[in-house]
Every structure is written in C-alpha cells, then in structure tokens.
Image (cartoon, rainbow, N blue to C red):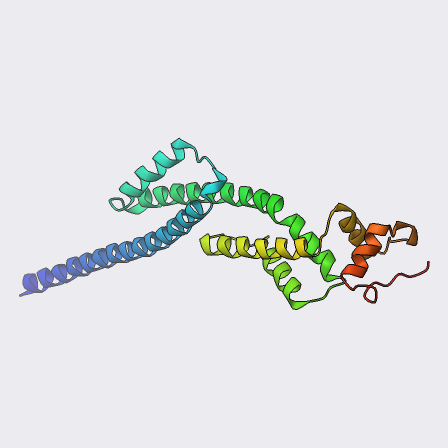
Length: 215
C-alpha cells in the first residue's frame, strides 16, 4: 500500500513536471508566433517602401539580401536562443534598409519639393487663399512623414503639378521670387520696385494687399 502511494506520488510529480514543460514550450511557441507576425508586418512595410521608392535606385548590398533571405527561411525551424539571434539579425537588416531609404527620400524630397513649398509660402503671405494654403500644407506635411508609400507619392505628385500651375499662372520668375522673399522678411525698399515688379503687382491686383513700412 505504501509503495503504491509512493508510486502514485512519483507519477503525479512526473506528470506535473511534464505538464509544466509542455506549458513552457507552448508559451515559447506562442511568443515566437507573435514576434514572427510582428516581424512579417515590418517586412511588408519595408517591401512597400522599396516598391514605392524604387525610382530612387537604392542598391541594398547583395550580402544583406542573401542573409535576410536565408534567415527568413530558417526562422520557422528554430527555437530558443537561436530563434532570438536570427530574429535580432533580421530586425537589424530591416532597420539598415529602412534607414537607407529614409535618408535618400529626405534628399529626394529636398530636391523636388522644398523650393515649391518655399514659393507657395511666399505667395500665401500676400494671396491668402485656401487653395494655396492646402497645397502648401500637403506638400510640407510629407517632409518628415515616414514611411512613404505609393499613395503618398501619387498625392505629392498631383499636388506638385497643381502648385506648379499656380506658380505658372502667377508668372513668378526669379525677380518676383526675390521680391517676395524681401517682402516677407521686411527687407523691401521702394528702390527695389522695378517696372517688372510693379507690372506684376498690378496684373495680379495686389496693390492693396502689399504694405511697406518706414524704418
């Protein structure tokens, strides 16, 4: 009887240990699944970025591509510390690719949109219409936005064309732009008002919208 009770206790202990082991394995597996899902969301995002900004012709090192591809294939078959190690390396590669595209996007934006935003800002100081303000705000809002996807680019390009049309219709050349810059910074003098500038002011009915002060 005593031996039977002892054996029963041993069996219960072994069962509990086995159950705890299974529970621990299931928890680890569940955590791996959650982290894998999060990782694949990051991969989807960086893939969208690469597809959307392919025109930037950014070359991701071949070694990174090969390592990333290999790690993704082996991730589903690993567990424990090896899973963590591969996960960290994949995340590091994704971050490197993301940083590369983000840096080049900033340069591209600066070259393509910054000047237009500046001109729209100058125009809005004397022609305060909702159209100009909306165009300026939309273009300007993408300066620090990230990630950038195709819908953002489509919107940006559309607003850029509209902005160029506004600038073209107002016939803003280098001399007029210089005039607007001086005007917005309160550095405009009567002597700066050339015939071309006066003609532009009259043509766009701005005689009563421009104020000059005496120092």
